[in-house]
Each structure stands twice: as structure tokens, then as C-alpha cells.
Image 1 (cartoon, each protein chain N blue to C red):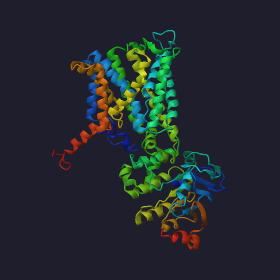
Image 2 (image 1 turned 30 degrees about the vertical axis):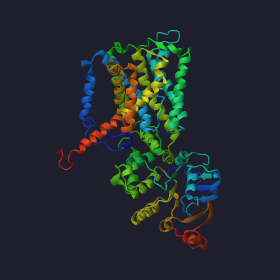
Image 3 (image 1 turned 90 degrees about the vertical axis):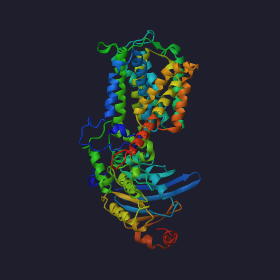
Length: 358
Length: 262
């Protein structure tokens, strides 16, 4: 079993353990090779709608949710700001780069626009994080919700920068390496690559000094201060770091839709990110992507199913809500927690002495 | 042990005291948990703070480290006024403490706990790169784990450890980096006789330049590891002296030693 597969945030066993005799490639379990193969080969069988809409949206939502998983799972800080951060990065791409709204968009080239978008979103995350980290629990949620709501209404009412209600359209990705990145296959691989990068970064950093200390801050902030850590600064830094993943998702989101408007970053979207992270399970970064997949599948296909039974397609939120309720009640660590328990039960069915099924 | 090599700080202001408390008062509402406490401890001095429950011993520690800042008074650490410093700034200057009730990271392994303690008082606290196996701090952490006899369980989660082992880990965390002064809050509480002997060995074999204050109810432990004693009563300093003087003092005996403690 690889560490990435087994170790939940609560039990990052052996951060400082020396590597075993086997190379890291050999320690990747077969299931991961299979998953990688399926994801890489998907464009051979899947149609454009599946690649671009379903999988593209899954990876994007997963990236935004994994930034929340990082903050909440490792840092114990539930923030409703991650969609706003993603939205700000997306808006920056539209405002600084080219878009259909030529009166506002500056049309700068991508190598200025992308770093600037990440930087501005990180500054926003740092400032709002600095406000939020001095509170705990429900108050963190309330403060971040308030900032998210304020940002949403600001974008809707400000016409000089954010172009108000209509937002920006015709925001297209740059034609890097001669590839049209909105082509479904290209966009699929772009999202897959970015999502893998985010996932790998979260897993790697969780056992770096920064990530370990963040878990220490989550479990026992007073003791961390008594070990020489500036707890407040560490939490703010976590908000800044998590903004990278949200920004990446936000930029891909604006390219996928080719537009961004206040509706993208509304309160319901902010809450959807929380729902996705909780349904997937916050104990592991993979949960964010599993949750995103479940959410996108429900969102995409439940209207048809509901319609067949004569219900309004709008009712799909009801299904998601019931699912959320079921997860919170029966498996607080999400679908990944269900999976872990199922595997633990399966392992117990094997006799520990003989290795034979009982 | 790594501790023998760590006192590389310049001996600045060594003429003064390691720890100097001037008129420390801590109010909880209208209640003065400690009132007008003035204590000076020389560098390298080892002192016990004794007193019945509620005498204000742990509150005194909390004021010294800044866990709960003092309401009034001045705290100097090696000549530097640290009264307004947050806890982490005091710790980075060489102050350490243990907690009466073990305050560890139960979800992390033993070695990760100690590694965090070593990282907290060094640079690169925000490093995003995982430590390599030849990292100096990983090595320092392993030495500390060995010093408190926990090498056999270093990859176990702290939550799975026996009580006595958690107390030893508590001490290891306080010895990380380059401590100059350590506050031990009832280190022997709940330990078996054997573990108490180990504790006495650990305390007496600390490098001579590291001073400490120990709060301890067990007189056998306390009076064997210190050279001076401060008696506290109702939040005030009641008596100061050598262990033998305190033991023989009739007032102390009436208040504390005869009071069923120890």
C-alpha cells in the first residue's frame, strides 16, 4: 500500500521516516495504475460531451474542492471562500487578458495574465484568511461566507472592473503550442494534468514541515505556539497556499465556459464546494475529486431521470441535498470513509493467521 | 545527545539572571491567581516551585511562557524584556516548557512530534519540501527520541503510547533545539517508581548550562533534582531557600509537607 493511498490527514505516519528499500514506483498499488490508465485512455472511448462537460467540470470542481480539503482536513479551517478565490482568478484572466468585452479587458498576453491572476487571487486569499483565522469553527464559516457574499454582490454591481451583471464572454485560452485548448480532448488532458498536479501537491506538502505543522496547529494550537510556531501566520499561509489550487480551477473554469459572470461565484456555488468536499470526504485529498465526480454526475443526469418520472428537472438539488444529509449522518468522513470501512471489513474477513477467507 | 553542542548563542547579558520576574500578577476576573510574584533564577540554576493545589504554580508557568499573559509585572529572559512577546517568540529565544497534562499531537508519530518541536525553533518552518532522511533536524529528532528511551516506538502514533511514554515524549519536546531554560510542570505525575528514576536521571543529566524550574509534588523527585526551592501559597511567594532549609521550616511543614501531600 502506498502512503498516499492509506494515510488520512489525521495519521500522516512517518513523514520523517527514511524511504524503504523499494523505489517509489514499485510502491504505487495496482489500483492506481488502473485508474491512471482509465483516465489517460478515456478520450479513446468517451464522446466530447463526457470529456469536456462531465470530466472537465469534475476536475475543475475537484481542484476548487481540494483547496478546501487542504484547509479543512489538514488545517481545521472550513472556508466558504474557495469559490470566490477561483472566481477572482477567473475574472482576472478575463479582465487582464483578451475577452469579448474589449472596453474593459486589457488584452495582455498569457504569460503576464496567468501569474497575475494567481498572485491577485493569493493576495485576496491572504487578506481574507488573515481576517478569518482569528476565529474558530462556525465563526470562520460565517466570516468567509460574509466575504464570499460581499464579493459576489460587488462583482454584480461594479461595472468599471467586473462589468456587473453580464460579466465577460469570449474568454478563450491562449493557443499555446499551436493547440486549441478548448478542443474537448485537449481540454480534457489539460484538466487531468492540472488536477493530478494539485492532488500530488497536496499529498506531498501534507508531509512537508509546512503541512505537518499545519496539522499540529489543527490538533493543538497552544502547544504549537509553545514549540515556537506562529500559529496565526501559519494559518494565513495555509489560506495563501490553498488559493493556488482554487485559482487553477477558476482559470480552467473560465476557459471551459468561455465566460464568467457573478452567477459563477454566487453563494450557492460557494456552498456547493463545501458539499462536494464533505460528500467526498475531507480526510483525504482524493475525496475532493470523488465528491466532484458524484456531484457532476448527479447534476448532469438526474434532470433526465427526474423528468422521466414527471418531476421538475430543478429537483436535482433535492437529490444532492438528501445525499449530503445521508453522508453527514452515516459517514461523516464522506464516500472515501465508506470505502475505507468497506475495505477494512473485507480485510477482516480474511483469517489473520492463514490468510484464507473465513 | 545533541544538547551538549547547542549552546552556541553568544553569552550576551550573562551577568544577569536567566529568568527574572518582577511583580507578576495574573487576574482571572476579580480573582488574583498569582499576586506580585518576584523571582530571579540564575543561568543554569535548577529550582523547584512547591505549593498546594491552587497556589498558582501552573499559572506562573503560563505567565512565563505567555500562554496566558500576565496582567501586570515584568518578565526578563536573559536580560531581555519579553513581557509583551507572544509565546512563540519566547520559545525561539530558548525558553521551553512541558505541560502537566500531556499536550501532544496524538494523530502524528513520535518522531514527527519531536521533528515538529525541532522545526519550531529553527528556520524553514514554512518549507514545502519534505525532509530528506539525512536532514540535520531529522537526525536531531532521532537523538532526542533516543535520549528519552522512545526509539523502539518512534514510528508509532502518539495516541497509541502508554501514559509514561507520553510523559517522556513531553520532555523530549521541551529539549528540542537549543533550550536555555525549561519549565517542567509536574513531570513525575502518574509515573511508576521505575519511570520516576528514569526521570531523575534525565533531569540531572541535562547539560549544566540549562537551568529549569520544576513543579513537583513528589518530594523524592523534586528535592533530588534542584538546588533551590520557592514555596508558593495562595498565589504569593511564601518562602525561598535551599531544599534542606525548606524541608526543615516549621511553617512550610505545617502548610504543605504535613498537609498530606508529597
